[in-house]
Length: 322
Image (tube, rainbow, N blue to C red; front, side, top):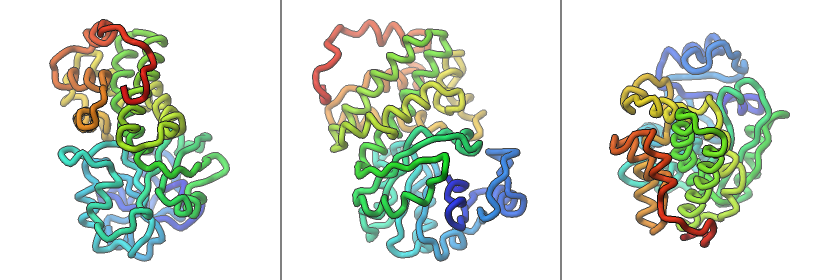
């Protein structure tokens, strides 16, 4: 996303690893995550969080959910007062069960709620970096804030839609990662298109149930942050969460799979929080529950299909909250 923003404004990215910051700043390439891709000349990088935020008009939090709190603790003293903060994270914080924007607001208790938002949609990084067409949803509770920022990421191949449903965008982003792990298992087992299509559809039902119970607009889940992101993550081999599922289908232990990955698969960490939120709000999440059972070693990937399909029969539609 930093490369998109750099098309419209001078942009500085903070890198946790100093060697990555130096490579971006001096060679305009991120060899750790996007080797061979030329980055815009006005995209700078630094290992110094204070220098990164100095004079910023907006801040984008592009770190995994479980690291937001620690990064925010370091960033808070340097954050220019009241600037808009956009979260790209798609998960639920372990323990607190907070969404990413809630973690940010808790870390900055005096920050205006309307100035903390989320960007979410079918935005696979490799395709974005390649300049392929895509669209996304930018959610702020105050629509005027989103409208002011709409042009920050927009390019001639990347379209931004505004949305005021921050809850829905974040629940969609977190839940779809869990469903994608299951879709990866299905593909890894060779179950075919019908099975994955069924998982995507019923996964959409699960995320809509939970989101609706938490106060989200059900229509959000029919948009880019819902079904759009769900389809991309469940069907693309570029998806880290889908890859986790494929590897689980081979019978490999989750700790080994995660250790070999260069980037974070948020669904692995978020499934427990998703299920805890389902329990708190009295809604069912059978696909998410099955993913957790596999991750915990209670069942194997080849037992999942029978476990899901053999549940007691029911009507397809009984209302969003049922």
